[in-house]
Image (spheres, each protein chain N blue to C red):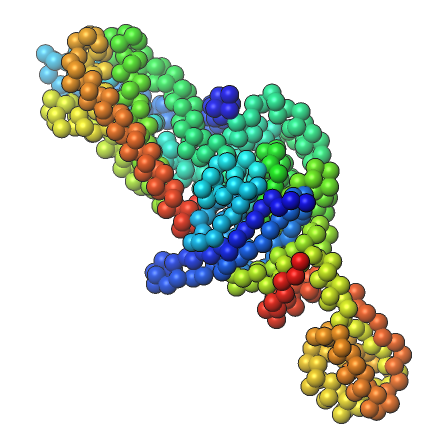
Length: 257
Length: 324
């Protein structure tokens, strides 16, 4: 029950802040849609007419997952930086629920809100492009959930760095472009990226959404990489975060900004 | 009264960033806080108060030593120990400024695993006691500093912990709000029987609220005693002596030599000596000097001493005085 109360408190806070910073939220969505439009018209203008439809579908899928990856993987890093700047970070550490649980729940709250924004963006993009993707939830949801676990793990690695260094805004901005590279480069071009966080999951979802593949079309190796990747990044991410917490507490950096 | 907080021999050093030079912030600090006690943690800037407070809260790991909260070692079982302790560390900065008063109270309660429904009666109680009822839907960034401070204390109280640590609760407040916060803390201590540790520079707060004080200087505990004992101790040595004739040059020289901090003033045919003696027996030596020239003594009075003077004297003299 305490977990549930923690989750609802953090979903509520995320929702209230989203409403209170509505102009900021709207401008972010509009900017992101504008990026999609630029990519879409770019392909229309210079792309090959033979593969036009597939390319546009690729752009829609990649750009949607880029948005998701940015929201999830930068989230805790930004939160820690903001909390340290505001002076509330130490208060999170005074909770017997544990700061990492609070941050994880806040991430889950933010994700729930962002998923609805992502779904809206996805439909607007499909409507704009006149391209309709396969959105079978039974196939997509399990892969998405496992992919999110690896994203959460990576998010905790970023969070660990933020908790020590605090002023990591420049790094977080660069990270957005690294994430763009990871979501846009297909595994056929760079197969070793399957071991990078979330890339395998996005690749599988791309196959579902564009090529109408189902869960039975993937081999055991695909699932092994997907699940192994998620577990590995989540475990490593959590361990790095806890280690960084320890360093921060030893050096007395928690209240610093 | 049983012990709620036990600080045992904590040592903390920091490294300077550039030179790697080690700075000893806290040097074998030990003290205990009984359940229901109000303790003042005092010391000049850089004395080690905040390091001590943050170590008690588990926000800082000491190099050595232990902190037990309700018998739980905060280094080993931090989250379990935090069920018994809450803190206001950065005053009004401990709040979300873009959330309302009510939203802040509900959010921080939720962060401790409490539901909004179960906390509602308690939230209403504190809104009433802290006179924040009318401001419940006001965003924190629109509140005065005093109201923000009161809200930060209410948030800490809502956690329902046995002990509350307050770092500079009256810092930056105007006199009126300072008194209001003081009254609220008195209410919390008396009516709710909570254990409170106040780290402050505001001596009237200590004199008014705290039963006991621990004074830290240069990372060490220099005093651990009841406030009334310290006041009595210093009060009994502070004298104001009215004379019916001015002192002679020789008497003045002798007195200044023996009591360098003595204050001497003359007014028409009377003169006044104000002195804070090292030991109560020194009064006889002083009287001997006055007697040497047959100076008539009109009156000898004990001076009313403020806790601020006691603190200044202890810190200046670095007096080792561990009673209790």
